[in-house]
Amino acid sequence: MRKGLKPSYTLHKNFRLPMGFPPENWDSGLTYQAQATDTFIVTYPKCGTTWTQHIVWMLSHDGELFPVGKNINLEVPHLEEVGNDFVKSLSEPRFIKTHLTYDLTPYNPNSKYIYIARNPFDCAVSFYYHTQGFVKYYDFAEGTFDDFFECFINGEVDWGDYFDNLVSWVQHKNDQNVLFLTYESMKNNPKMNIVAIAKFLGDNYLEKIENPQILESILHHTSFTNMSQNQSRWSSQRPANMTPFIRNGKVGDWKSHFSVYQTQRLSQKLRIRTAGTEAENLWQIPE
Ligand code: A3P
Image (tube, rainbow, N blue to C red; front, side, top):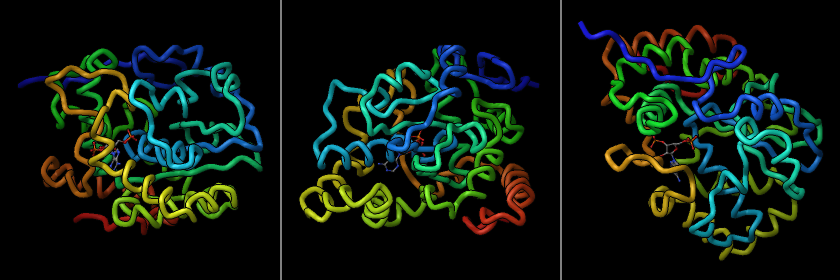
């Protein structure tokens, strides 16, 4: 029988980092002093980070088009990838991406934190294609979904266990400086969620989207169809034979990937890990 393939990672302290992420940037990123003017976009990987980075970028640029030739990760940088000095070099107010659990995320009672949760089934599938496609980071081009599923359910992937991240943040869902959204709700009603983000960011952002042209521009340009264009704006290059980074953006895509047994196992873990927390009612748990 074929032995399960595993992605390659840089092992650093207790973490798995994508190869190519400098461990020293990880360490310095974790020491960043959060500023009162900062807004963090927090997710477990593949839960709608880039989409939200784009929304906040457009909100802070009056609905302007994100230019081809720029990369969102230099504008709304990934803390653990670029480290402390890079983030500090940006002028305030800063928008900062992170995949850290609550306890590791730099905290300031006046900073804002937008957390996006996505159901673990679609997250696992999306993370599989991500890991397969970034060949230079993971060396997993030949890996199957079944191979990846075992790593995902055991938390043996970069940024660790999905549930550690979700549960750490859901406990702060109702904090006044946390806006807790779901990918599924953003798909279902993007306008409502863009308005919620603007409101959370403050009156000057809310005023911007009171201009219907700005709101329409944000809605239009942050749609899946438009973000599928000129994808070099969102990520580094992937080999042409791999799925694109902005891949299919669906809710329920997992159904064409999971076996009955895999569904039972992840449902069981979802039930156990979220019991007694507000995450237990976020999604209907498949049987
Ligand atoms: P799929 O792989 O399921 O298509 P992240 O930015 O956290 O890495 O998340 C990537 C996931 O969000 C991918 O999911 C991607 O297609 C999806 N996504 C990105 N932009 C989107 C948009 N504008 N609308 C819906 N989904 C989007």
